Amino acid sequence: MAREATIRNWVVECGHTYRTGCAFYQLSKSEKVQAQKQIAVLEKKTDRVYTGPEARALLGLPDQEVRVKPDHNDDFTIFVQSTSVNRKLVPHTRLLLML
Image (cartoon, rainbow, N blue to C red; front, side, top):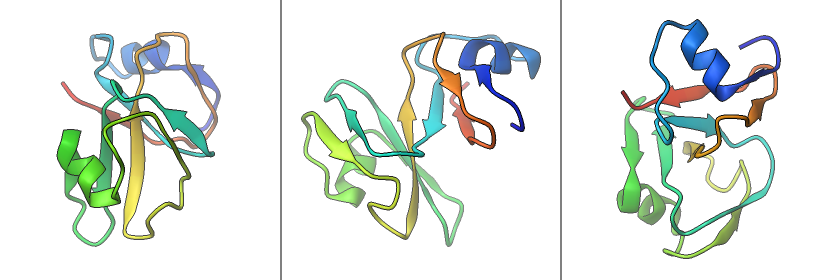
């Protein structure tokens, strides 16, 4: 995405129905990830996506709130579940949709 947009607007503009929790935004800065939030990781070598407890385990993250940096592991691109429809995505952020 080349411009700033809210997650809901971006999903709808792409022709999909927005459901809270279906979108995962690429981690672009260090932030706290709450225990209840899902993460997804994209393995760079294979383009395989892992979610849930398996994703946290691949990154060595606990099942509690933790601060995560985008470069936490060079083998994976990290995505965080958004439960907010108003979260603004900065330009060039990648978004995973779990439809």
